[in-house]
Image 1 (cartoon, one colour):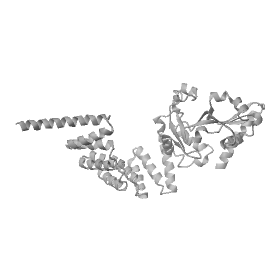
Image 2 (cartoon, helix red, strand yellow):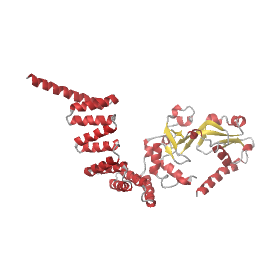
Image 3 (cartoon, helix red, strand yellow):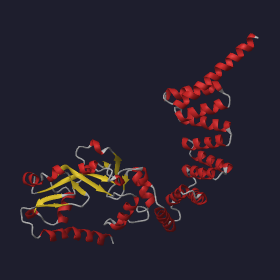
Image 4 (tube, one colour):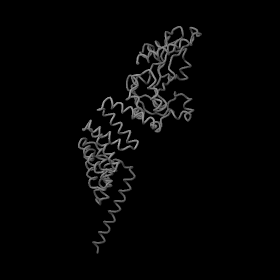
Length: 386
């Protein structure tokens, strides 16, 4: 199937010559995919390129993936990828031959000539592309899974090439060479720009994701990642019993995975099963004793069920792992203050402010505690005077 897909694409590309029958030998021929777009300046200099640089040249393009404002940051070669070819008809072999020579750097490259916009249109569009384009090796239950695709887009990486490619969001207004038409019509193309909504999965895509992960488990009942991802999917859908089921499978498959125990505890907490959640959190911290995220979760649960002294112990534990954690210093200070340990509370809050002086909530609470101390001292002094 893989070879058939590429043979079809190559034959389609070479069929371009059928549309060039009336071109004369001096006409310029540009071979590119539709998503490889040369800049206006480059298009104005095509003749100069082939007349002064080489008979066949390869203008390079800056790769974008998923969004019009998501550009490649690594690998470096993808910032100037030589996929486009320009020549006069008399110097042309076949479109596929030219493209492969450019890709293999056997044609002189001209840098920074345009933009390559690929995988645009959101999760559904990416899934449809994976199912239909020549790289059939990516058409599998891991890489075409909508849930995986959404995660890849959010994380800014693309695994659908010969190497992992990483992207980051940027301001196209700061790029003087960016296509002016897109800049001037940004509202028209807003669905192709980065947005939080782009990562949302429709109910149909959620079900397709479930089917992909389920098939993976059918093929390999010990597929830990499939268990975890199914648990995450069901948790996101509010289906807590199903989420619990898959996370329990995951704890069996890998009993030493503290993150899995932590997520299971979170599900139990959401179900209101606080005693069970505490037991599972304790399993998690035994495995990942230095994972402050788990300790924070356990402390929050203790605080939620009014076990303040246990919450204090958790925050103290966090500070033995990360002694400059502003969040732990603040939370410990707040709980100590609520428990009446005013002096110690002030000590931790002041320390938090040395790391993050602009923390308004901490400043406000610290001012309240100091007022309380002043009032207590005033009362004691009046009592002594009597």
